[in-house]
Length: 258
Ligand SMILES: Nc1ncnc2c1ncn2[C@@H]1O[C@H](COP(=O)(O)OP(=O)(O)OP(=O)(O)O)[C@@H](O)[C@H]1O
Image (cartoon, rainbow, N blue to C red):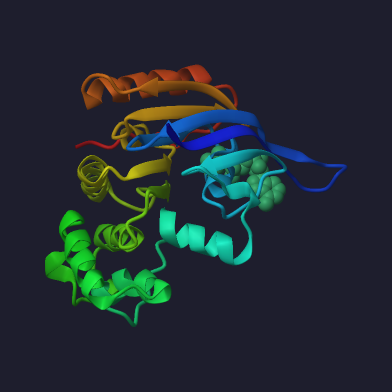
């Protein structure tokens, strides 16, 4: 049973006379426990796709089902409740609050959702461990490296124990060492907690940590590759696919070194 089903998704932006078709009838499914990368040239529709699946935007046509709920139909309180119960968000500009410690930033989503305090402390200990932040819990964001700040954003996304985590260019502002570290933590979360992750990225190295990469071009599904062997072989396959998809797109494909 798929956790996410995307069916005939179309998004048209702009004025009737100058429409921009960002998504063009795209369909695919994601199983529970997958770590899925979304790649494609600049303007292919990656952010638009992730925004609609994550309920931040609505499609012009088509449906998205997450955990048996048609999320494209949800509005108001029911949408807010669905997000709180099921979804976690990690973005490139991670928006930590500078007046709050790491611990307070991570706990913030729970105070909004009014979870019991005893449970919150258990969850806090678990997410601090899985993101390697236990010793930094009482620091303020500005006392951390950029990579550590991004891990706080991941911990904050995980504190509600979401079924599905969305990451849009999560390594975009990190150097290669911090990116590698973050990707290792995301892999641990995916493998130990079975959290399903959907991640948009330009970067083949980043995508090589996924279990499957979906390539989109001009708002439609171009190809997909599954990781079967080691990460280096998967990285090479991703680079080959980027060359194949090529065609007028712009890749920011600076390979990271481990
Ligand atoms: N709010 C908007 N209004 C009009 N056009 C938009 C809007 N958002 C996106 N688009 C257009 O839709 C298309 C897909 O954009 P999107 O941001 O989803 O691509 P992307 O694959 O994430 O690109 P990038 O890799 O450059 O971030 C582009 O042609 C873009 O210009």
